[in-house]
Image 1 (cartoon, one colour):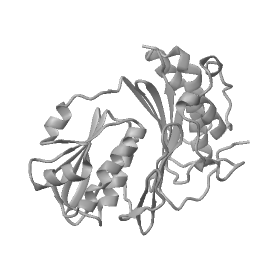
Image 2 (tube, one colour):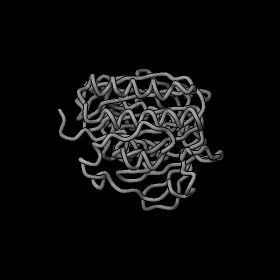
Image 3 (cartoon, rainbow, N blue to C red):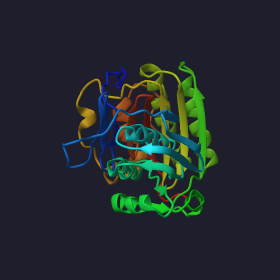
Amino acid sequence: MAIFAAVPVVMTSFQVVKGFRRFTSSTVTEGLRFVFPGSTKPSRLTTMDTRVSASNEDFVHRIVQRFPATVVEVIGPLGPANAGRLFGMLLRCLADCPDGLIVDLTAADVDSDLALAIFPSVARRGAVWPAVPMSLCAPESELADRLRRVVHRMRIFPSRAAALAAPRAQSTAGRLDLNLAASPAAPGRARALAARACRDWSLPRLAAHAQVLTSELVANAVRHGAAPITLSLVLRRPYLHIVVRDGSVEPPRRLDSPQAQTRPQSPPQMRPPARERRATPPLTHGAGIPLLDAVSSSWGYLVDNAGKVVWAMLLIGGQR
């Protein structure tokens, strides 16, 4: 019996269910709310809209480059009334696992420091997963001075070219993407892609676990999600990232415990010894969340009004 189940959701959230720190952000139809670790009081902005390009009168935000680093250009007035839409779009960009996320504010007119607060919020989530650095572009001006006061530790570049030229601590060593139909054949195609990735990227010890995780995530997207379904395998050391998108806004949960997904999970260093983790798991479906807990180094999900992303990571360890 499947452990994943589709349940109604009224909030949009980013959660790390197992591993690292746990972040939750949520939106309701009236507005965007952020909830930070150690805080129970959300701050409210506006309704999230995560379309690739969106405009409201003179305000436009659009993706002008996806890979290797994603560049989002913001044009026109950016304020509390539309910052939530940009926030959602940036979270979706992070889920693509680019080498970096760059927001170009050269043509933006920011009328409130409250709107600038979305940038450190997105950066914190990107640092948790998928460990993608975020930077901003703004020419030397009053806006650049305000950004330095608000965002603190984020890098601010005078131009998009300077941001793209800056060295990054990590880069993507391999990437495979696959569009899948919601059919019984989808898990098998997912396993085949995982096997190919581990073979091509010289990760033989991860092959069994990668195949099990991809098969399980895709099987549950077929059973409980909605089209379109996309699988991405991304090698960014020290982890292999497995990302499955589908068109359903209903998050994964256990059938046996409605509250289980909100309980703190063991950090990565508490995972079972290597000799236990190397045992080949059975290639079956329906194990769901317990399987993710047992096999992955960390996993979580992102839900917004465009659908959901469920991701898992496998630690590469000492392999080169």
